[in-house]
Amino acid sequence: MQGPDKNIISDLKDKNKRDLAFHQLVSTYQERLYWHIRKIVMNHEDADDVLQNTFLKVWRSIDNFREESSLFTWLYRIATNESITFINSKKKKNFMQMNDVSEFLMDNLTSDPYFEGNEIQLKLQQAILRLPEKQRIVFNMKYFDDLKYDEMSEILDTSVGALKASYHHAAKKIEDYLKNTD
Image (cartoon, rainbow, N blue to C red):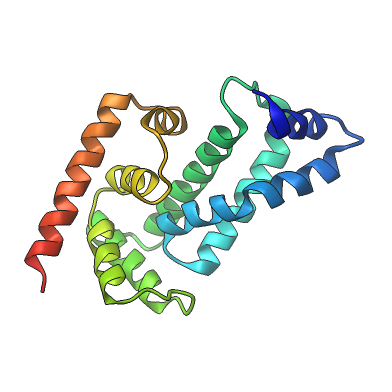
């Protein structure tokens, strides 16, 4: 690891520079992480909460970051896990089945005053939300975030082959959904 991320990490681990380095980390990664999280939880307020939890977790665990992966990969892994934890806690609180989770997320999207998508974008999101959680996350990371399979493999701790299969299945299901709804 090199460049600005290396400096941010070393400054985060230095008690005298930690506050400023954390501010730099947030300003560097906040927007990308927000949109990654938002595509998982589908609502602005929920995404803000999960983003805040993500940065709190980073703050608390920076000393445990072993730098075996890039800072970006580590942050995405935390953000993804925090998003899944958030959805799972909603599932438990509301005793939801998988289909109900898709409906819950769709309601979250359509009731979000910050959603500015047109009808086509809404239809695409409906198709994506019908996917199983892992396929949905893989599809979003590949299609919207344009991540490489090796990066996704590190973030999700899954083989590249499994990710390619998940993406292929997700794309096929989305295509079928879009063809069959008019």
